[in-house]
Amino acid sequence: MQDQAAPVDPNKLIARIKGILLTPRTEWPLIAAEPASIGSLYTGYILIMAAIPAVIRFVSSSLIGVPVPFLGYYRIDVGTGLTLAVVSYVLSLLGVFIVALIVEALAPTFSGEKSRVQALKVVAYSYTASWVAAIIGIIPGLVLLSALLGLIYGLYLLNLGLPFTMKCPPEKSIAYTAVTIIAAIIVGFVLNLVIGSVGGYGYGMRHNFSGPPPHAGIGSGAQIQAVGTLIGTALGSGGKVESLPADRIKPFLPATLDGLQRTQAAAERNAALGMQLSKATATYSDGSNHTLNLEITDTGSLKGLVGFAAGWGGVEQDSETDTGYEKTYNSGGELVHEKWDRQSQSGEYGVVIADRFTVKVSGSAPSIDILKHAIATIDTGGLAALRNEGVQAN
Image (cartoon, rainbow, N blue to C red; front, side, top):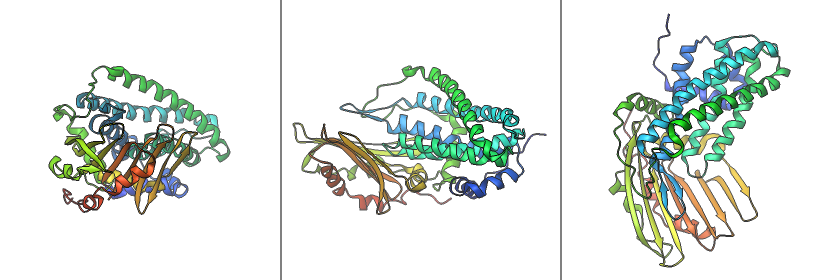
């Protein structure tokens, strides 16, 4: 008899995410004891959570773009980006199951009890750390930090959960975790090769700098759109937020910035996977060597994700090198990211406004204080006042 896919309750989903991340010692016994099946674990949790990295990957690579010095933003075209997102999503679903099979097979080796359902539980809920941490990657400059957070906390969750789910002695859980991680790395390596072969490591990519990505019909992505809506619902936006139109966000680009004249300005709104994203960019220059770049992004339907990222786990980063530093911190309730290279006298300074808008200034300057002052001259209060514009009631 096949499992019937019950409607997903966003409140229960959020409660489970918070439980496994914030109070895992009390959550694991509940998880181990509750009735479940392979089908219910996939439809009620894995299908939704595993979609988060795929959605973030698509938005970052095809809608936001990757900054390239002196050239603007590099984007993968929407068609290729969507294909890679779908393929990575499907393969991640397969990867979770394969790792679960390995955990089940290893159970007797570590004096545990074989159970496919319990193995899938411990793998899926341990992966929660990586799936949620991927959200942080939507904020520029935090991709590596998000990956590190997900990996470290995922290891902790797995080690903590194995004794409850697989009934192994607690003193053997560290070795059980280590062998499982080695297996997971191998599985991930093979699956990444498959994803790479689909993307062709450049085949089908377009060098689209400083302009809107080419339009691509994505009517065939109805299921992915539904997943995007579910993610938005689970994380607070309901997938029902229209980002600002181009003519509404562009006025926030001032005519001058730190005494420099605006030499270029552009704004665009893109939609895919049932979500919208708007971005305005401008370049300011004195006509010689002093140039600043301003970027304002309305995360629109992703506002729930950004708000979750800005508040999740008290995100902090602080690293120092011989030539500069990079740090992320919370200031007055706003997430701030700054990066500075003393050798080249260049860097970037960005802030998340009202859990919806990101404002970033980058370029060369005598000090990071110039970039901070430039941000201070932006009408961030006006942006914050628009936090609920386009938000539709659930």
